[in-house]
Length: 196
Image 1 (cartoon, rainbow, N blue to C red):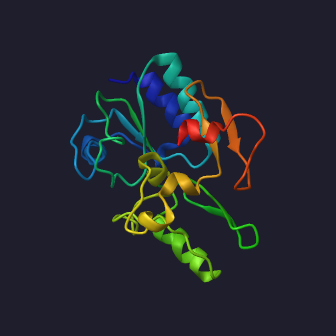
Image 2: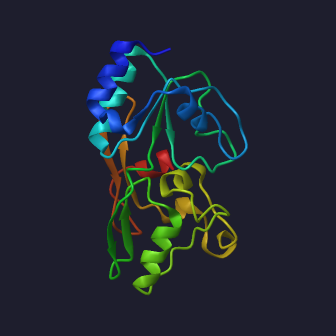
Image 3: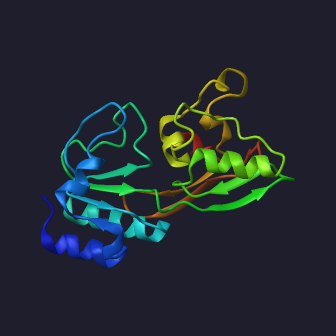
């Protein structure tokens, strides 16, 4: 159970409107499409990497678990709390920042719905192959976490094959960037593959 002072600190970071405390609200975040877990102590909806970073710093300081979550459409329990903690729901962190038709690159936040990205790409005459069964409501962040594929994976590959780089918030709260904006990146370690 989170201490009230910790909840207030998280509320200062996120804002009251992007935080769920009531049990009836939190229960929706205790399961995914297949697995039932534990009731989270708190559910937060960050909108920036800096907010996630500050939550991770608090998690280190006070020792509470943090559970990242997209739409909860997975079937492996990856977004389900095991023993309380704070669910960091990415659904409001959902902007398509860039689609470059010349470089064939999209830059998106983790809460972007797969279908929305497919529609935006299609509007530019492009094609985004990963199409898990839940593509109409699953998030790109969740697709990356689960290495989602779908029927087109046989021909085009799975989600990890379409991730060139990441912005990652480490458990310490440090924000790092990995990867390149090109298919081939030969400078240094491929840290993107460490995460995906």
